[in-house]
Amino acid sequence: MGKITTYILMMSGLVLLFYFAGVVEPTNPLFKLVFSPETMTLSDIYLTVIGGIATGLAVITVGFITKSLELAAMTAVVPAVLAVLWGFIDVYNALAGVNRVIATLIFGPILLLFILSMIDWWRGRDL
Image (cartoon, rainbow, N blue to C red; front, side, top):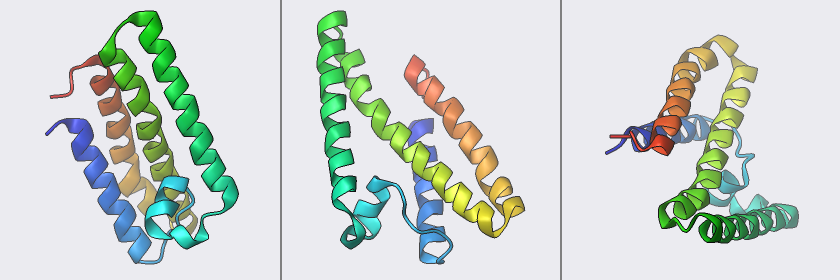
């Protein structure tokens, strides 16, 4: 299993831990869809659909320009990974509202390593 997968699993576990402990509420549309779909608003759905259409157009454009199937596939995955990263940052901000020191000690190193692992994954060195 690659480093990026390990960090996504670790961060998802932390998000679930803090969600079930009552520390954070889901704000990211992807987290809202999983944790509390009844609170999804029409604007969240429109935002998700527009993001999906924009990603599809980006994949088609990159595929036609570069003629590289791998690069086109990575173009589709990057917005999803960035959305997950943004959700982790939302959880950090919510936890920092309760206790900034604990939030920094728990999420700081993991977020930094997650970002560095994303760079390695993008370059193809994620083993």
